[in-house]
Length: 215
Image (tube, rainbow, N blue to C red; front, side, top):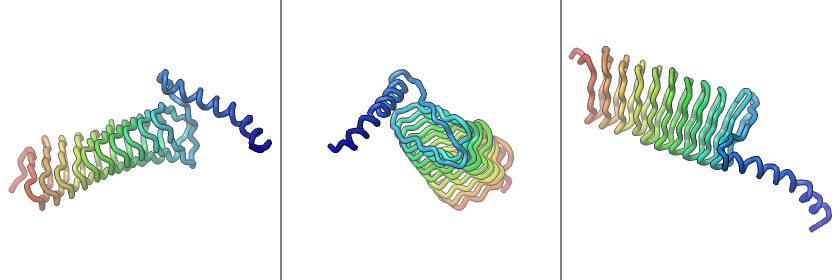
């Protein structure tokens, strides 16, 4: 080892020790690791099994870790690539879930796209646009303006204005629905009340629309 390398090691050792001590309590004592967001920059959360507490004004937040717990403010875009992550966020402009077994809770979201399997997206209020292409994901929301199901998933909402189902084996439970188009097969759709404009071009779909539409 050269003298320069030895000096670098002596300089970095305290920093590495401090980082280890900072992370270890977050794992052992349930404390959250604070992370400062900056608008216009990408914040990457890469350490597995860590609790993160994001602060500031978030631009793009990317979760590549597995088993992370994230508490965060609003963001222009949240991308969850890792598996088994739990995220609690304030309103999101854009949400993309690529990894499996992810749970995201937020008051509202502009656009949500889920391609991973076994995830749960819980939205207290409005979803402007949702596209589900995975399997066994559950989206629950108050209202969905535009909904497209291309995989095999479940959606539970008070109302959906425009719904298109091209996948198969989906479950859709709505209190009201304005417009519903099905081209996929073996989907189960329940609309509790109100009239629904329906176009069904699939096969073996089970529809429970009340009151019954006029023939």
